[in-house]
Image (cartoon, rainbow, N blue to C red):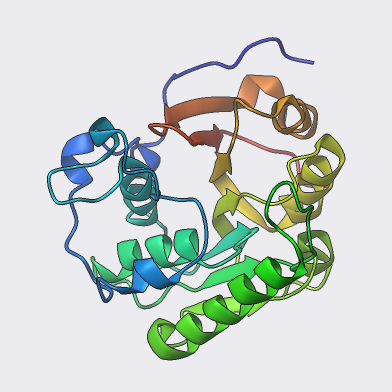
Length: 238
């Protein structure tokens, strides 16, 4: 196991880390849509440092920045969508540069959590139904919701190669390792993987270091509070 990540190194120019100067984007979705979507992304208003002058959270802008360099003929996969806040952040990033050719495939079985984390059956159903409704009204076919476990989804995948993955499902080591292993054959060379709660769950990092050769895996960016953006320079398909 690897004790620490490499935070940098050379990388192909097509996948260069976007600078903050490129993070400002024109809104491409209804302003009130965010207020209707359950979730945690960009909900903390207490720290003004997390928001830009236009009122957009830096973690949202980070997601959108990497979407901007998605190669043609590839797909985006999100694991764990809940109410769709991150999925629509990704979609807004695509639409802001006219990329209607890329689909975002969201995998979430919508299984209830515990009462303590607020993810009881009712909360899960509300999140799912709200996301379904938003997709029907605003996604125009660019967001595809798969209500199945992401590992099973990978086994049935028949879409294009996956260049960008946003991983925010079950943060356990076993699940993350299973997800990475299942999706590995479908990843484009030099994929970008964006993990939620990277620092909070050691199992996420352990799974990454076991699936990908450490010398080819690096963390290239950090969100303001939630995200780690990782790059795989080279990987061995199973």
